[in-house]
Length: 149
Image (cartoon, rainbow, N blue to C red; front, side, top):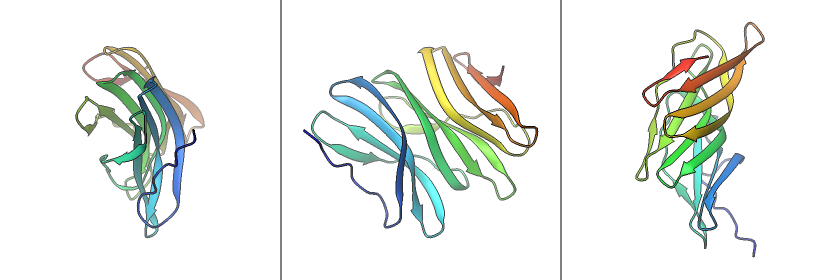
């Protein structure tokens, strides 16, 4: 049975990625617009309906593109935000209670993340692009911090 996803705010809503932990727990990520700027959008499926879950924002133009669920208490989301000068990497983590920002290395200007995957709580990967150089970008989570790989 199709269950409609709720809309956040009054502007456009976009979902870019989805990950399921079980038939009663799935996550969808994206963004929605408040005025002329986007903010992160995270929705959770509880087996019966979708609900919007509060998520942090860093700058303007915050958007999440990828999500990966290791378990019900270990979910990663990756995307980007605009710091007033250029796009920056954005990673958020669900700890079973709330979404929190996960600091990423300072990489300079115009870096974006589009996907994330994990093997365990101490081994996760995020991928994207180093825009000014047109090069790939890979970050690795070692259980303590995100580092370039």
